[in-house]
Image 1: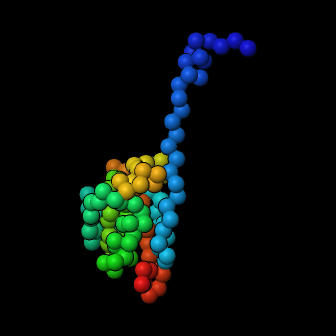
Image 2: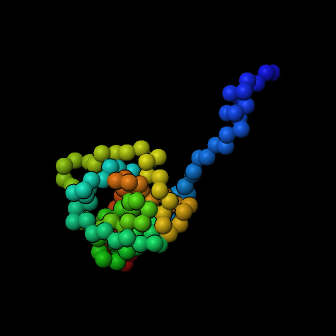
Length: 131
């Protein structure tokens, strides 16, 4: 078998594929959208944004749940979004999961959205998720 210089270069290049762990969500919460496009008017209704150096999906959900919000989302590594619903103009534009590729500020093994890319979670437990 003969290798050309180009083949040898390709074999020498390291392959970096960052794989994130799946998040463990608090009881009663589920992933509603794995990755969607956010916008300046926000896809979550009455969006309250908190920036945290310890942001993870679970930490964000717990933060939103404590304030009685039913929707939570993580975006841009350190942003936690809480709200009361999704914008009523139909489902938000889906984005490839590979675009929600920023490590969480609170755990680099977990993904926390991207630039204008948000992962959205919903409380499906009744009467309240965290109660």
